[in-house]
Length: 113
Image 1 (cartoon, helix red, strand yellow):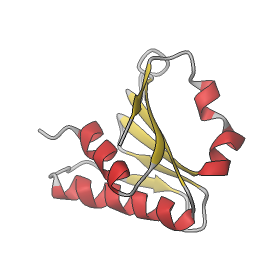
Image 2 (cartoon, helix red, strand yellow):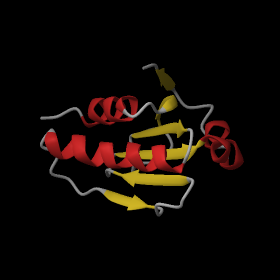
Image 3 (spheres, helix red, strand yellow):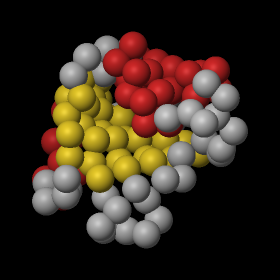
Image 4 (tube, helix red, strand yellow):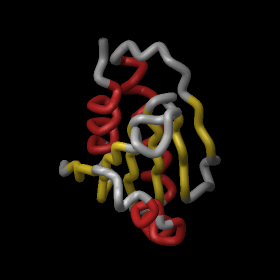
C-alpha cells in the first residue's frame, strides 16, 4: 500500500513547491483527513507541480480517482484524492484566499524540501 501523502509531498518538492503545509482536518470534517497547501512562483510551475503529482501517484500504483479543479490559466489548482486534498497556489493568490488563516487552529506540519 502506498503512502499517498508521502508521494504527494515528494512530487511537490521535486518541482520546487514552496511553503508546503500539511493540515490534519479530521476534527473538522468526516469527508477529508488531510489537506496540503503549497505555493509556486508562477502558472507554469503550478501546472508542473500538478502534473508531477499525477505522474508520481500513477508510478507508485495509486488506483484511486484523481479529480482536479482549475485550468492551465488558474492561479489556484485543487487536486482531490478523496481523503487528501491538495491546494496549489501561485504565491500571491495564496494570501488572497487565506486558507492558512482558516485552518490555523487545526494540527499542521510544515514540509521542508
